[in-house]
Figure (cartoon, rainbow, N blue to C red):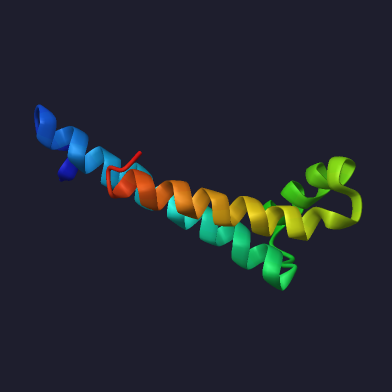
Length: 80
């Protein structure tokens, strides 16, 4: 398992792990916003976001998804 390494090796693997996790979350957000998904968890996010963003909820989720994907890639490549 990658998280059992000691020292700097562990840090490298954790960057990759957290970066990949951020990319997956960003993809989930972007894809669900693009499809206007009816997945329960996503609908909870939409309901909370609708208070602030009104009719621009899906656009704001797409932008947030792209930003999260970008930050995840930068973290996975150790550029961040």
